[in-house]
Image (cartoon, rainbow, N blue to C red; front, side, top):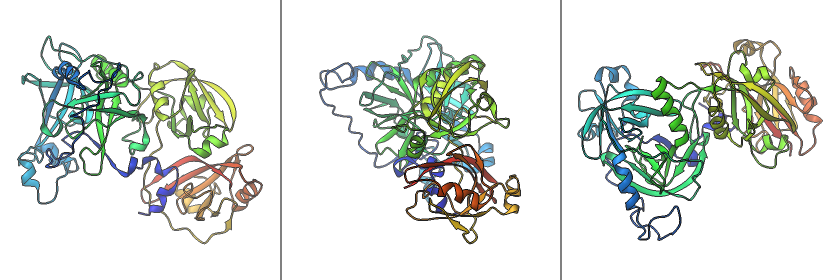
Amino acid sequence: MSTRFFRSKFAVTGVVAFGLGVLFASSMDLTKYSWAQPNNGSAVQPNVRGPNAPDAAGSFANVAERVTPTVVAIKTLQEARQVRANPRGRPQVPQGMEDFFNQFGGGGGGQGERRGEGSGFIMTSDGYIITNNHVVADADRVTVTLSDQKIYTAKVVGKDPTTDVAVVKIDAKNLPTLPIGDDNQARIGDWVLAVGNPLGLDFTVTAGIISAKARGSELGPNRGNFNVSDFIQTDAAINPGNSGGPLINLKGEAIGLNSMIASETGYYTGYGFAIPITLVKQVADALIKEGRVRLPILGVSVTAVGAEDAGINGLSTNAGVLVQAFSLPDGGPAKAAGIQIGDVIVAIGGEPVTRVSALQRTVRSHKIGETVTVDVLRYGTKKQFKVKLIEADATGTVASVPATSTPDVVEPAASKTIGKFGIAVEAAPAELLKSLDLPAGAGVRVTEVASGSPAKDKLNPGADIITAVLFPGPKRAVKTPADLQAIIAGLKDGEYVSLMVTTYDIPSRYKNTHVVNIRAN
């Protein structure tokens, strides 16, 4: 597959943050032990005073003592018949080391069974426990160990892969519970503790700070249409087995559910990610009440606003989310209300929307059937629409970055014309348009993008068809190279053009229509 496809803004939305791999922090996904576990640096803390600081001795002991009894160790078993039916689900171990790791449970005990370990925390005194969906998703048997070493068989009450939250239940009474905090009040730089069972080391406490909030699509590709990307980043050490354990503030309250790590090795290298507790609590309550989560949706597919998207709308910062497409076959409620592809959503219900995670969080805070006001910028013009939220189904999406496939590039024919933005195009072949279910004469295919040109990293030779110009002026169809050349030739340096582009790959049957905004140098 060609690497040229990854040069476009559209394609790089799935690139892994910091060049690292983002992995679930569950030992089902990785081997159980490491001989060189990194030092998390939390043994000695500075003597900082204040409401969110260690105690006078520089210790987190008081908080750790209060919260540890509310954390549980979770062990899962997936039966051999399922593992054989889904061989891709087997944990990855170094070649030739299978027997070594089998003795620690990472290789399935020699019978094809798949065993996993994770963490959780007690939500209610009668035995409801919150954990990650990926910890229990494929389990045939789940056991829970409390801090006093009592062991219970657990029942999976409900699980939601879109948020990676699950609830299990044990038959117990008068259990200690972990107070729920407010992640909205947590600030970057606040001290936090992570409690869980990393690498099979039960009830381990690590400390660090909140490194960032609202981490989104930069963490990696979407794991499904509805997935929410709204993570708290922390440098508290999180390793395989920490999944499902709480991220705790110094009041002893849960503010997040530990879920992933960013690592080249699969073990802690400084970055961990937790799901915000307000979202976790919302999902957990729904799972307990109904056994499933009902999602309200706008029916749009969105991506973060880039520099060109902000500039074309007169924004001084890259704030808001760009509507790339409608996610329902009939367009859905957003399209019916008058929202258009290329609009930048800046507020919902009066609440500012600065990024994808904020939009997702705001939409989820409303009820299905509720009508919300949506404020947008349409190439600098403010507009407001009223959208009635509907329930998501298998074809919808809450608000997600478009799928980031990696199509093979179709080698282009000879260039026909070179435009102001450093692109060469040709009339799209009729056979190609037909295979993409596009009408004859529906666009021009990009055949070349000049190095250092404004279109570099925006358009993909042999994989993009420009079908229309959305700005400047009214929407105009592009049927021939001359149509596009006439529009581009009239632009001055510093002006913008907004293109409707279909990215495709015939062998994989991949097709995605989206907006590309480009600024002339």
